[in-house]
View (cartoon, rainbow, N blue to C red):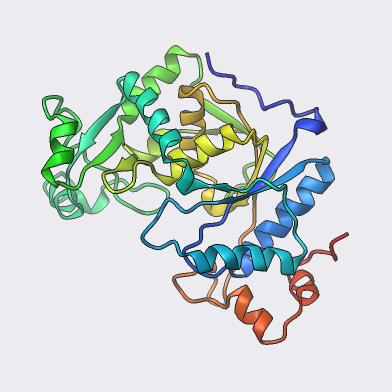
Length: 309
């Protein structure tokens, strides 16, 4: 049976927070805010602060970006525990977790392309009103959900782009047998619509999410859940854009018998047009601010944080 209680919330010696950026571009002010927010929260709790490099995307991750993360954090005066977890060193851990989920009978192989998914949705009733997940993507229409005769190993060898999906209906049914549905978590921050305290979320809003692909034996959702459990993370601080993803993460934590962390979602730093900052939009990086003569004190003041100790 999964542990549905936060991990030792009163034992300060065991409290752990983490900052977990991806090295697929230069960090910007949004990352600085999240890192400073997490540093402040960890200090207030008397907790350990860990750094994790989330580089499962081996196509976009580059060594210079990983080095840049450390340089940016040093510049801001944010210091971490010595052991840094590099996700690409732990693919075997994610595969092990995937095998555990497969043994529960809640995974299936899917070789449908984006074009095929869109085509299938177009044949359904009211395709223009087809449900979408919190990120705005159309829910997977279940093309491969019941193809139990398709062999995963055969597909992997065939060269077909294969994904491993979670059968959300079966997963939720399993949660119910464990008396873990409706699914809840402790929110110490605030969600996009003001959610706080003991929050209830339905993972079915995400449909049959992808947990692994042929070229990458994991996904963001699977790897962060495994990492947080392996690192003993007790408190997760992150932006409000990841609030609804917590439903998937709590579901996986319960199914994998992982402890439950406490969550705190913070506000996002936005550009002048009210969109959140992003690497893909080429928003000003911390590196460029530093090179232009902006000081770390100015950045901290700009974001509402005091000087480091």
